[in-house]
Structures are given as structure tokens and as C-alpha cells.
Amino acid sequence: MTLSVSVDSENPNEVRDAPQRRPLTQREMLIARLVASGRTNRRIAEHLGLSVRTIDAHISRIYKKVRIHTRAELSVLVASASLASRSE
Image (tube, rainbow, N blue to C red; front, top):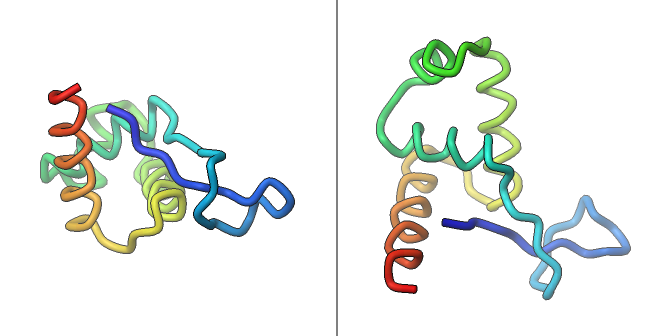
């Protein structure tokens, strides 16, 4: 499963529709799946042996990369990416 977003190569801080992609890292994908499974940030942190603040930072980066704002949106995105990867 791969989630990625487009970035402007001249201004990497601006997200736009373009062929270049910024995929989520493996760690971000794992955390996205754990969020989608309904785990809290505290439970994710305990599971991975990380601090809650580190998990907060990962989730914030995920939201920015895929241009979403809520856990519910992330869950839908993870589920749709999962279905897409199964059909390939």
C-alpha cells in the first residue's frame, strides 16, 4: 500500500497536483494503519516504544502530506489504499 502526494519541485512547501510524489515513509504508513485501526496516540506510542509527542509529530506530518485534517479522513484513505493495493 502506498500513499503519496504531489509537491512543487521549485517550492517543496507547497502541495499541488504534479507528477512528482512524496510518499509516506514506512514508519508513517505503520502509524497511519494503527490510527485507522482505532488506536489512540498513547496506545500507538506504547506499541512502538515511542513517546506520545513523537506519534503526534508523525501524525501531523502524515496529515500535511496527504492534505487531510482528521483521523476519520485518514482511516478512509488507508482503507481505500488497502483496497487499491489488493486489486493490483
